[in-house]
Amino acid sequence: MTQPVLVLKDISKVYRLGEEDLYALNQVSLTINEGEFLAVVGPSGCGKSTFLHIASLLDYPTQGIIQIKGMDTMDYTEPERARLRNREIGFIFQQFNLLAKTNAIDNVALPLVYAGDGKKDRERRAREMLEQVGLGDRLSSTPSQLSGGQQQRVAIARALVNQPSLIFADEPTGNLDSRSGEEIKKIIIKLNNEGKTIVMVTHDREIAKIAKRIVALADGRVVSDRPTKWARKTL
Image (tube, rainbow, N blue to C red; front, side, top):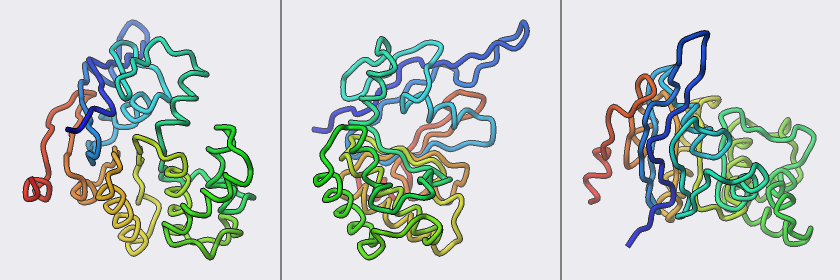
């Protein structure tokens, strides 16, 4: 039986503009179980980025409850939240967010540095992750020596190196040409098929179709939550 990895209960994020309250998120409640592949979609300004930042503990909600693997995070200090992110959450960003002068293996090993792992173990695990994404021959390459698609594969390897419970992907193909984008989509699908829990945020409905469940936001609210046609065929 699958267990919830991420639970959001009545999450709101409110900004005060003069005498007016602006709701970036408004009473959002979602449960994401182990092995799910969820896409969060909607137009610009709908609350997607706010959702990602709050659900991944990069930002605080104004109200509501966030649970990760049953742990209520609302009273966590920032150092506690950072440790939980490092242990349980992997990130794949549109801009890759790699260190420009650092080679692939050290970019991938960075979360392990923060976790306090030894150098030999860091290098071994980073090498294994890079081999899994097809970059075993580019361990010493810096980002400038890699294509956009290769940089995103390094970023995926970095997201996986700590064996997180949950992976957040923010427009993972947004900066890539169509061929590289297709390669990254295949990798993400493969990861989910292997049991990884993935939450992907995107404005692109075509990319969202690779997910098994699509949640649409509008004006900070969930307006639909449904399985994709592909997922319904596999139920």
